[in-house]
Amino acid sequence: MAMSDAARKQLVDYIMLKVYDDQYIDRQEERQILEMGIKKGLTVDEGLSLIQQLASEKGFVIEREAEEKAQEVLEQFATNDGVVDQKEFQNALSLFKKLTKGKRPEPELKRRLKSMMQANHWKAKEGGFFGKKWFSQIT
Image 1 (cartoon, rainbow, N blue to C red):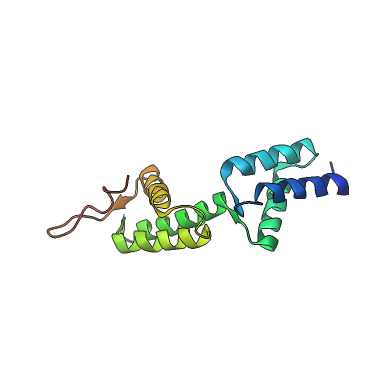
Image 2 (cartoon, rainbow, N blue to C red):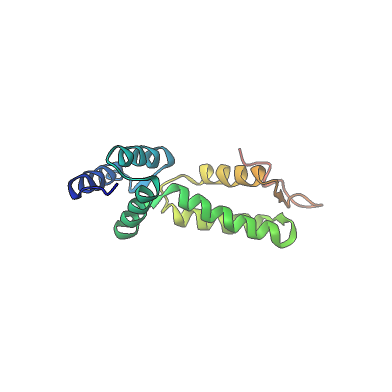
């Protein structure tokens, strides 16, 4: 079912209201927007497309997309030699920070990256004779 211009404008306004203060759409906000879109006659795919279009035009961040890109980078590092070393982790963290435009604090981003690694059973290269436990210290 096609969405009317008035309903589309209402949804666009709703999205802009959600990002008004921080220019960031977290997963909860994204879900709320999609639920509103469904009530207005949009499919989930159409809602996601509208969110993406506005994010691209207005320059705000979609948390889910930033996390997906950071996870892809970690996966590439882990697939490369079976482990993620500290430098690779820092590279993924830098990318994640850039993608979120500094809207989330670094300790939170580190925890999210660590969680991604643990969920995917990717190993961290740490320790050694003079090494430190950089990965274990992330809390």
